[in-house]
Structures are given as C-alpha cells and as structure tokens.
Length: 192
Image (cartoon, one colour):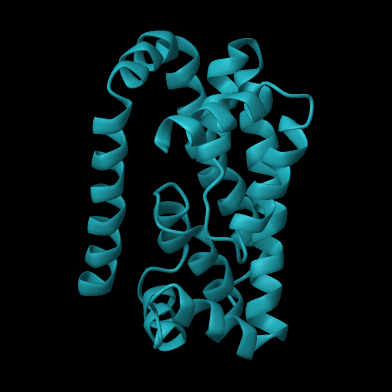
C-alpha cells in the first residue's frame, strides 16, 4: 500500500500539474486542510532538484495567502473557526490560544509556523485574537519561508542519498512516520 501511494506521489511530483497542486495544498493547509504541503514539496524537490527553491517559494507564498484566509475565518467566521479548532483537537482553542497570544504574541507565530504543528491553528486563532494583521503577515512570510526553504535545501543537497535509503526501507520509515504522527497528536492533546 505504501509503495503504491509513494509511487503516485512521485509521479504527481514530476508532472506538469505539480506546481499548481503544491500551491493549492499549501494554501488550503494554512486554513482548513489537514495534510501539510511537505508531502508534495519533498517528492517534487527530489524529482526536480534544480527547482527546489522555486517550489519552496510556491509553498511560502500560497501558505501565507492561505494563512490570510485562516485569519479571516477567525475574524469574520468565528463559529467555523471554532469548529475547525475542535476538529483538530482543541475544543477550548480560542481561550487557550488567546492566552498564548497574550503571553507570547509574535513568538507564537514565529515558533509554531516553523514546526509541524498545523499552521491553521495559528492562523485561525490569530484572527480570533485580533492579532495585528501586518505583524501576522510578515511573521508568516518569515517563518513559513524558513520552514519550506530549509526543507527544500536539505532535499536539494542531500536528497539523492536520503531517497535511496528511504526507498530501500520504505515500510520501516512509513511505520516510523505513522508512530511520529500519532505521538505528535497525543503530545499536542496532553501538553496543549
């Protein structure tokens, strides 16, 4: 099963539709979609290492625009924002994140935007908290750009060796990834 999915993603990553698909996923992930753009970015960079930074730029720009949609959901569609937070395991999300923004402000965006924590949680709650929009935008550009360009650089320069190792032990790494995802979700629920 993992081999089929992997093959499909690698074929899509090399197709002419890959950049548009990457932009759509990056945009949607920042406001409501559960799958991060890294699942497209990684294979795309491995398929076309010469375009690694172009793909990172697409991810960054689309993610920031998607973040503006998430922010707007928090400001103008509060019930929808609350529903999205509940779906992602934060039923008391507004109060919880409001406390974070009150205590740490800009650091919430800078730290959480560069981590695998779903960025939609940051964008929606920034809107709910009425965080300064200008600061939100420049911090999003900085943190999302750092994340996507770092991933692209690592894969561009070390990708072929990593890809060979990954393909050789695909099932093992798939199970480890699944364990990390489940562990991450559990950690989010316990600590946040």
